[in-house]
Amino acid sequence: MATVMTTVTVRSKKAGFDMKRIGLLMLILWFTFGQMNMASAHGLEAGQVSVLIDNVNAAVIIAPYASAFPFADENGDGLLSAAEVDTHKDAIEALVMERVILRNEAGQAATVRTMDASAPASASGEGEQVGADFVQISMRVAWQTVPAVVDVEYTLFGSADESIHYLMLDNDSEAKEVIEGTFNSTVTVTRLRGEGTPTQTGNAIWLSGIEHVLSGYDHILFILALVLATAGLRKLLVPLTAFTLAHTITLAAVAFGFEPPVPPWLIEATIAASIAILAAIYLFGIKVDVWWVAALLGLVHGLGFGQALTASLGSLQQWGSTLIAITFGVELTHLAIALVGLGALWLVRKPRHDVAVRYAASIAIFCIGLYWTLERIPI
Figure 1: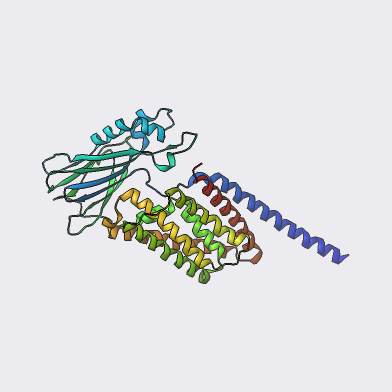
Figure 2: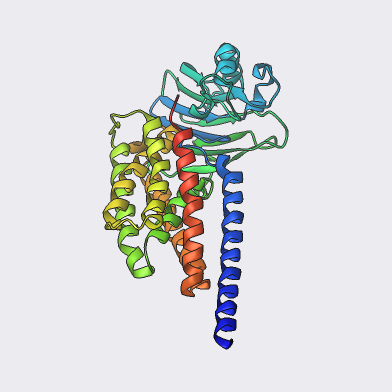
């Protein structure tokens, strides 16, 4: 009789644990499917401006908010689709020419040589009108003679509380330091060349790398999937290092002009698939050296990051130390995320709890990675 009661008690405890495991799994999956649409592909982000001056020429890349072009928002959803941008392309470019101006010491505006306004890749959907909250604009301007002073004027706001983050570089200066700051309704002009140029330049450019990682769930989930696919800090260091080195190699290749012979959507879809692949290694008990898997996937992630920086800054080779600082911020954040993941697993270090959490988290990450992969494949 005692043996039967003991067996029943053990089974009851096991059933209670199984119910907790199922409850935890359901909670994670509910959160998973509720957050699936919160990560976008690598690329230019809303509210950014970059300016690069080289002799008499200047390259300007802008991502103004869609609210700056209310006349183009035909359906009133606050977003601009590719069709809406194409329809109002001339009016959008005309407004940009009025609101984004580079002036020399005589107050003369640089002549716009070329300009192209387009919807970002996220707003190019088949069948339905997919919208984005910004417009992607690239322009090249020039003066007839080398300007001694360059003032950048930006007044392209959709509302009084909007702000635009800028990165600017005078390639002809001796220091070649990046000027970083924010345009808003009260600060609309900054000096990039000449007396009065800000002395407080890009000392914290590496923070942009941190922001890049934390603003994209695909970075976070990839590193967490890598944590789950390994066991402990020692076994994690090798694949994490392999990923970092591979990521840096392809990023450097892009910076020196390498153009991947594949379309951007394929790189983005592969990045998303990499998340599912790492989660599957744990879920299905796949016996493989994780370090070389991480290295291969790191090569693809580096291409994606290179695409994002090229979209934001233009020619990466000319940005030199800025690129290194941003990359440092990215890799530092990857390490921090890995340590957080390891810390979370340490809190549930009892074997049965550890397995339950790893299993539930891997299912959630696998589902998200698979969903993002399918979402990024154009149909």
